[in-house]
Amino acid sequence: MLIDANWRVLTVGDGDLSFSLSLSKQLKPGHICASIYDDEATLRAKYQHHALDALRQDSVPVLTGFDVTKPESWQRLDGALFDAVIFQFPLIPAFTSKQAFDDQKLSTNTLNRRLLRHFVDFSHRYALNPAGPMLALITSKDVKPYCEWNLEDSLCRGTDYQYLGQSNFDIHAFPGYRIRNVDRDKHVKETSGITYYWSAKPHADLSASLYQPAYLNQDHCGMCRAGPFLNEYDKRAHLGSKKHAMMLRHEQDWLTYLNIG
Figure (cartoon, rainbow, N blue to C red):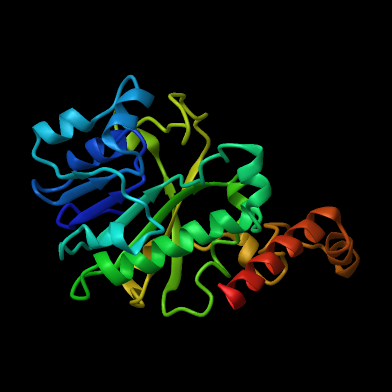
């Protein structure tokens, strides 16, 4: 993750707040604001160990009950502006009941994509300083379901925000950070993380420090992260595979949502 100590940073959806606490040690004092989806009572009941009190002791502002998908949550920033907004390992919460699942018309894949599109969009609308680098960062994983969201291509289709590239996320660079389950007090298995960068600005210098994965090359299927294809037969075999058919369904569902959403 490429972070400048001079940047003003907002973290969102930071589970037990351990990432925010670790990041605060790398930034200049007063340059971080943290937020979480849960209210304070839920945070304290859910996580035996959390960083809320430590952040408050360090005079770091923390917004609880912050819903990334709601403009009114972003408006609670009350005009505060940032250089970067960071969302670590986002994932929609589990449905609370079978009825809630049955009532939802959108697929889980589309719901996760919608969450992240709202994040990038609202970060630019409400939180990022037009005079700064204006960066929205998402750290995710190269495993299901995260790798099925086509982050590089269609997440921000039809907007003015550009995908700039990605960098490896090294959790060891953030001592004390614990990746948590979104619904309960449980550590998530540490798999390799990838941080994706978006901005309304071109950022030629930053893009030079990022990389583009091989699966975005022409001899691959970027949507499926498959390839390289050795020949036309190899390519046709992939295009006829169950994996590609599934990803096509996810992509069509998403594009349909964008047309009606």
